[in-house]
Length: 104
Image 1 (cartoon, helix red, strand yellow):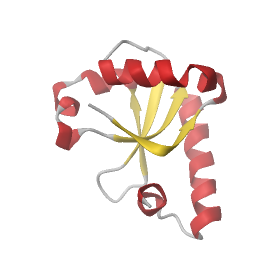
Image 2 (spheres, helix red, strand yellow; image 1 turned 90 degrees about the horizontal axis):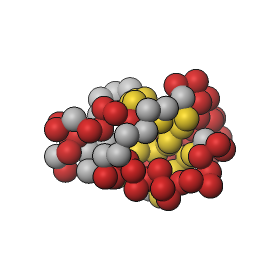
Image 3 (tube, rainbow, N blue to C red; image 1 turned 45 degrees about the horizontal axis):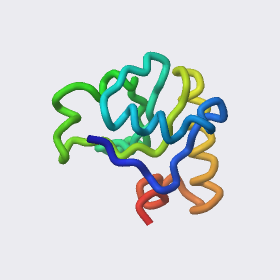
Image 4 (cartoon, one colour; image 1 turned 45 degrees about the vertical axis):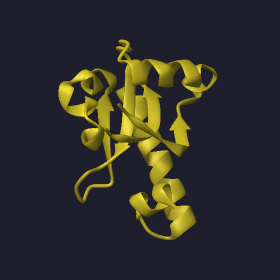
């Protein structure tokens, strides 16, 4: 089980396939080149996961489900998307309060 943000960031290469990609993430279908960006559970800002990690039993439990704020193709694309997210958060809030930006 995964939760998606209403302000979901998506790599431009995945823009047209967004619905299909989200469905595959929910149902555990393999997507070998896909990375997701989630809110960190600790004091960090964001975490990058390979989509295959979400198939583990730990993430299937509702309480452990990651709150996904971005989907990217490739690890480099995920890093670029994290930079874009942080720039937007700083511009909107004046600080790096990522959790408040996505939960309001």
